[in-house]
Image 1: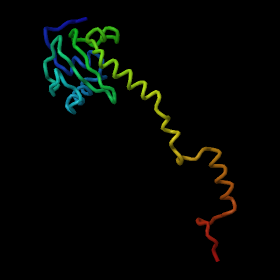
Image 2 (image 1 turned 180 degrees about the vertical axis):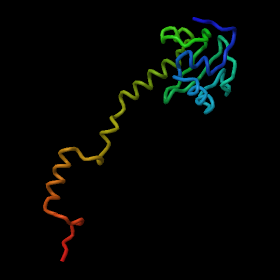
Image 3 (image 1 turned 180 degrees about the horizontal axis):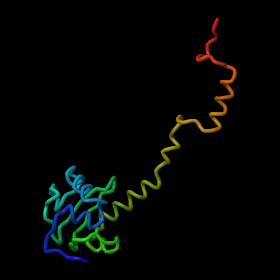
Image 4 (image 1 turned 30 degrees about the vertical axis):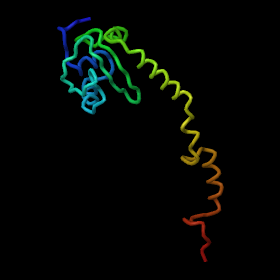
Amino acid sequence: MNLPSESMRLDKWLWCARFYKTRSLAVDEIGRGRVTVNQQAVKASRELRVGDTVALRQGEVERTIVVQALSNMRGPAPVAQQLYQETEASQKARAEAAERRRLAPEPAMALTEGRPTKRDRRQIDEVRQGWGDRWSASIDD
C-alpha cells in the first residue's frame, strides 16, 4: 500500500477505497450532496484525514464509515477494505434494507398489461385472420 502524507483529496480516496468506479463519479456524487465528512457538506477537493467520518450514499444504500488509512493507489478490494471501517449502525441499517428488498413483492407481478407473450400474440393473430385488409373492426357498408 502506497501511503501518502497525512491527508489526501476526498474524491481520490473514495476512488481508491472502491466506493466509486471512477473519480469523476465520486466528484459527481460529492457535488450532488450525497457525501458528507464529519456531518458537513464538502467539495471534492476537501482534504481527508485518518479518523474522519464519511457518510455516503451509493444508489439506495447509505453508509457511514470511519477512515482508517490513506492510499494513493487503487488496489484490490481486500486491500481497499482496510482503508475504512463501517460503523455498526450503518452495517445494521444496510442489513435491514437488504432484508426489506428481499421480502418486497416482485414488481413484475403487479403488471397486468404490457408486451404480449408469444401465446397472446398467436391468439391475437387468430382473431385478426378474418379481418382481411380492413384497419377497423367495424363493418363497412
